[in-house]
Image (tube, rainbow, N blue to C red; front, side, top):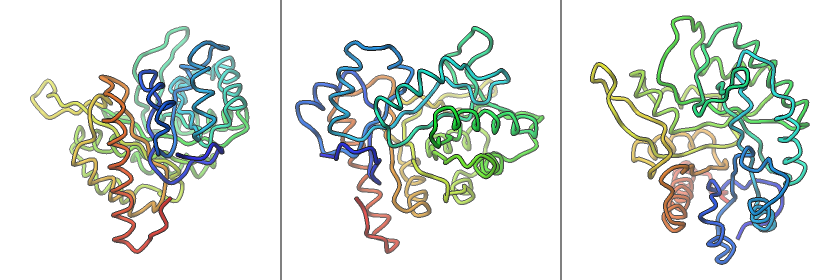
Length: 290
């Protein structure tokens, strides 16, 4: 069983789901940590907080935001930031992260994390928003690379260069979502391994893994969907090995948000990720694995 301090170990954790609360509390599985979306816990109390408080006593916790709309053109929602800050103070997470995307406009909120064109103007906007968030929350955040389905003609930056510049300007850390890399590169007919090799791994403090769906677009080309509803694919496991070889020991998360399986299947995915990490680090001469 993991310790209850705030530090996220260089092991695999999973997204915490209500259907697994009882398994976790009864069995106390040997897993590195848990991650939750703060938007699911912004009420003052109730059963979700009761369970999360009990689980937090035994395991480190990460907060992974989905609603700050960092890439949005409008001002950040101050009430949302205040509630996010209250959760940080309450649960003392080891990591706090958000997405390079936008998800709100005016009073409207969207179910999807929408893409940002990579331009000088949006770069300034995103950096300003990250500065505001880090100052308000009094903590460094991690920014996650997106899964994308369209490319903007107006973009003047390559995605890796754009993310690298954000980290340089703001001092934020990075969350490398390996499944997002694979989804985006297949959708845009780019080479996922080259993306991993170019990514600024010195700033990476967390890796995400997930399953994805597959479809075809309007002209019959292969289209991947970041669905988080099935096991990690072999291709993503291979990319993960490449990422571990570059990042060395870093916290890894299995995301499974839809068609949620029983606890044993999710736990097995975490164990597989730990095994890949150990194997890669052994092969590259680094044996210091938590």
